[in-house]
Image 1 (cartoon, helix red, strand yellow):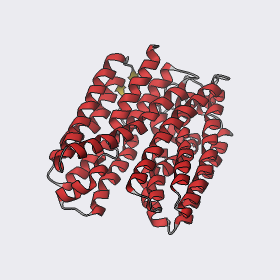
Image 2: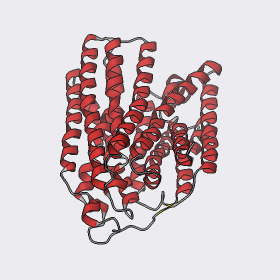
Image 3: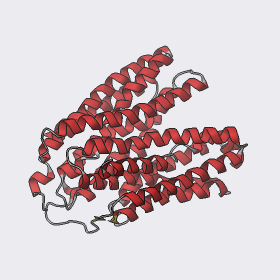
Length: 401
């Protein structure tokens, strides 16, 4: 196998092992509530903390924390997830768990630093490579769910939590060690480029395009819980739908990444690459719109079959991800695109911090919720069309800015 593609596979495995932490604690909900004597509402704070951590990770990306040696940055990010994973089963206080879950959310910074690496290794193939890597988020979710299920069947009560968390923490460092052996290091620039016109935060393009991925993350982080909260299915059916949605998003990430590659190879200029990015994201949002309508019908009819179909189609919303995360190398000068990756990530991932609570406040019924989701898909398309008419930063500043 070509070394570059081997690197992509290794990146994917590191992402999958890290994102196994995402929902694992929730799968032990009854055990956790009994162990700490907390309410179900208090249990929800750990996931809120994790999601806020996802947002803060991109805020920290503007500092020197995840810059310098690429390998060192990846090891640091993995440690933010792995060390709490080792510690959590032994923490006596629930609020200590919540604090540790916040730091585990920093695992999402892998997406930005791997984007910098992919920008160096590939050109037209960037969306496909990124799509494979991003699929690791969802393979990781499935792995975490199944590890928790195995532990629950093999061990009693809190021992199951200990076993699942210690195994998953060890797997993270094993994957990091294997990855370290195969991957070449490089420097992510620490200095900030603040020359006139070179501040990514002062560029209108950064804000407009950063928001194009906001609706996708809004849907990804809330659609599953919204749908399952409004239907009356059996426990096994709910479990199947959760897995189907994760698998769908993982596969669509690869499929739409490959489509982005095929479109990109036609024109590898900065504008040509950006046209492919906008095309893939627009197509993903349009098909998501259809999937959302099917889910609306499924909820109204309490139909498991329609819900399964709706999740499979709506999962294409993740098809926006590979294209979005290849934008910085295509649209910004070489010296500032690592900084631009974190800026775009911070703007888009603000959805993680606000969407769950806003949906809880705004949604008074099923129709209201679905209308919000449909509006999000349309908003994504409108922002993409707006950004396509703008000058790219690299077109304004030149590639040597």
